[in-house]
Structures are given as C-alpha cells and as structure tokens.
Image (cartoon, rainbow, N blue to C red; front, side, top):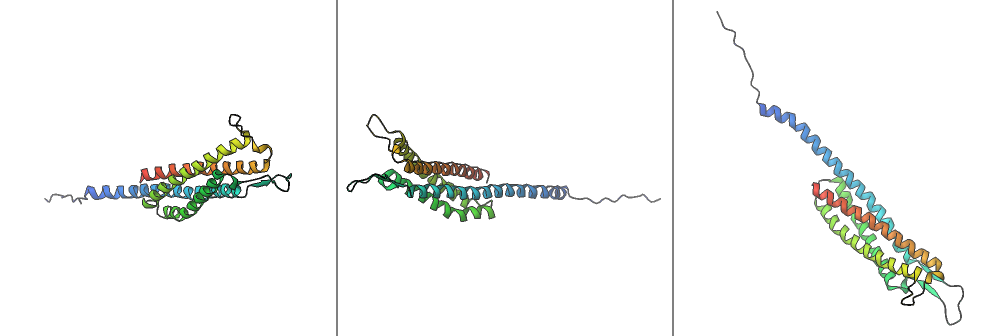
Length: 200
C-alpha cells in the first residue's frame, strides 16, 4: 500500500512581503513628489505676484512728481521722489528686489521639474531672505517719510506737505502699500522654502 505524499512548494516569505510593500512605497514616494511639486508651482505663482508688486512699487515711486500751479519767475514749488534720499533708496531697493525675483524664476521652474532637488530650494531660501530684508527696510523707511508728509511733526516744526502736494502723496502712499504687499509675499515664500527643506 502506497502512502500519499503531499507535495508543497515553499515560497520565501521575504519575497512576498517585498512584493506587497513595493507598490505601497512607490505610491508614497509619488504622493510626496506630487506634494512637493504642488508647493513648487504655488511658489512660482507667488513669485509672479511679488514681481508685479515690487515693480509697481518702484515704478509708481519713480514717476511720482507734482508741481504746484502757483509759482513765480524765481520760485517754483515741486515735489518728486528724487527730492528725498529715502525715496531714492526705496526705488533702487525695490528695483533690485524685482530684478532678483525675475532671475529666480528659472530656479523655481527647476524645483517644479525636480521636486526632490535640495540645491535650488536652498539657494532660493537664502536669497529670498535677503530680498525680504531689503524690501522690508525700504518699505519701512519710505512709510516713515510718508507719515511725516501726511501729518508733519509739531515738535520739530515740520509741516505736512500733503496739504499742498496731494497727488504726490497719493502716489508715494500707493507705492509703499505695494512694497508691503511684496514683503508679505516674500515672507510666504521664505516660510514655504523652509518647510520644503525640512521635509526633504
């Protein structure tokens, strides 16, 4: 009488586990890549907004000029941005920030194409911080002069020139608001770059 011998095929457990884990790890990697790519795309559009705000601030301040209608042969009352060293610094600083943001667009595109690359993000993080510092300093200095132009200072007997130069004050006030819009966008860019570097 012959005994029935059962035949069993041993399958290594490690291979089955590896096969079961491989799709999960691939999906996780794809999800992380998609998340980083989304942040990089948002970063690109924020840079476009910051460019528009910085250029608007620099150009509005650069064309600010008003001449009072009453003048004599020897005296003419005129107010323009180059009459104030602070406003000159503001125009130069905001133009530099806008120029940097334009040059940073290719690096932002590289971050979209290669979301796991750390080099472009580190570079953008460093220079975004410098641009944020420069735009904040320019906007704060210009805001102080605009405040004095609107309200004057009784202690030092400085008069509020906006009572006469209304159009000039409206232009410089608008440029200061635009500069602070670029400051807010740059702050968001710096925070986003820091979070992206932390998750690499």
